[in-house]
Image (cartoon, rainbow, N blue to C red):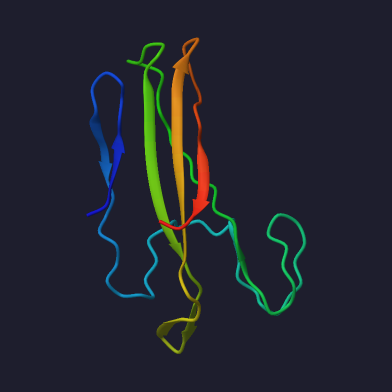
Length: 128
C-alpha cells in the first residue's frame, strides 16, 4: 500500500492511505476528471493541452489541502506523490495499454509562516 506521509516538525502523522495500485496494467487510478486530458488523436489542439494530429496530451497539476487550524508558525509539512502516466485504448469492451509508463513525482513542502502555508521547496521531477 502506498501512503502519503504528513510529516510535521512537531508530531509526524499519517495523512491518509492511498488505495493499492491496480494489478491490471490498463486500469488507471489517478483521477476521475477529464479537463486535464485531450484524448482525440485526430485533431490538432491549441491552448494548455496543445498537440498535433496523431498525439494526445495530459496535464496533471496535483495539489494538497492543508488547513491552517491547529498549526503554528514554523511547522512544516512534506508530501511526496508518485505517478505512472500511460495511454490506453478500448477496442470492443477490452482495454489495451498503448504506451510505456512515464514515471514522475511531486514533492510538496510547505512552511507555516505569518499564519499561512507558504512554498518551502515544492518540486516536480521525472522518475519515481
